[in-house]
Image (cartoon, rainbow, N blue to C red):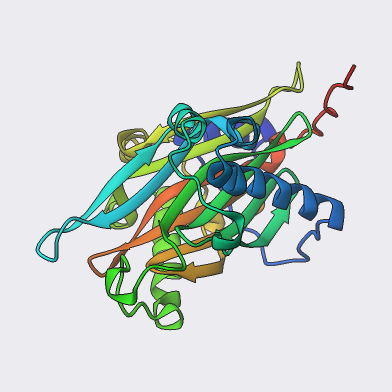
Length: 300
């Protein structure tokens, strides 16, 4: 079989939203303390900025194409309903002091779950909100691109989105959903892909323009993910359809996962909905297009 060029793989990744091929689990790049501290700083700009009504910190933390999703149940008789927050809504509601809370009541906990190259996975827990956060580096600065969140640390157990959530029991099912999503897309198995999709699924591919070295994102939603697979576009060869999946964390019906592959990495945020894990936010980073980011401009 003729070897495919890098251009083929980049085109396939972009066309299908992220048609990735497999790689054995190898050494995981370790981020230095400075990178971890920078990612935590962005997380705190987002969290403390929100609670303190500091719109400047909030705007500094989030990407203009932010996709922030929360699932809640209106009543015991209804299914989970989604709510979105856009970048502008978060900035303006922060400016309006909609979320203000005294520092001693915030109970903020932050953790870097993984950093690889210019993508960071961070968990933020506070009194009112608990977030799984995906960040990308833009001009040397970490920016929050995707968030899946749930109720905070002070929420009574009976009001949790998924009462009596057993994280370790759910871990294998969450991993299986990641495989259904990625391997279904790689092989053209529409039924398997649909099993892992939700109507709110959003996939963002993070790229860097080779001529200008400027980072940008392409976002696809339900039909943009499903229809190319139905058309058999951007599929991987049969011997390159396996993925190496790791679950980074689980909490209150949410899962944060990473799938390592030879020509890219996929970061997935999943929601447990009526007993089924569904991919909600996916961030794909093709390694063939991994170009060093320029440093931020010097302040005058």
